[in-house]
Length: 248
Image (cartoon, rainbow, N blue to C red; front, side, top):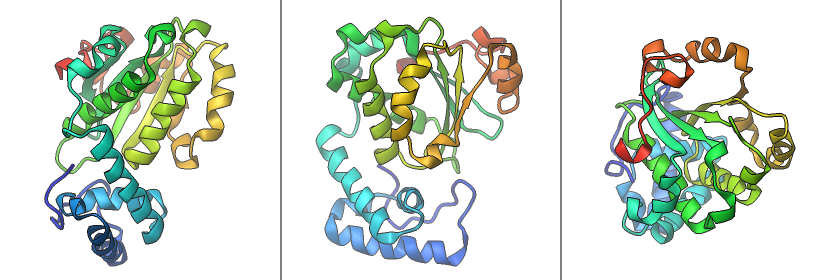
């Protein structure tokens, strides 16, 4: 779950001065009393949960303790194995490759390959964790965030799965706070916007600001603003082949 508790590391954007460090120290004292497992978590992890609650120690601690409890029950061995998500991986909808210009790993999701009629919601939850953990392990030292390209080419009502979308959103917002840097939504069909209207109210304001819808005609130019051509997937005009997430 992170480096040993209390270790000082410089992460994304540095520390916002002494007051933030002090709040993290106070938060650590509280959460370690509530759950000794918190001692195994580094300061940057605590800081992400604290920042996710606008530096409110009480709210940040509550969110973090909820995360520890969730991790113990949902990921008891500390990781999700390929065997636990075989059906989801067989759909070839999740890839991980390359980095943006500032060193954040990139994940690519193909929403049109999601098999709603055959999905098991618990396995879907597991594959979300599996994919997010894979991205986190690819982060260079000093980086805490990742980037997603959400490709909806071919998406139709047969792929629409509001329950799964909300489950993924809950996991991302509650258990991987302050991890998302940006999402490029590409090849978005007009019919998807009906599902989007249902999902949108459940997205927190901070996350909403990180989601960018890209017109097909501006696709490569939009990606180039954040990603070098050598790191853009070749299917979008770049030079890097896509790699299935299980192979990263």
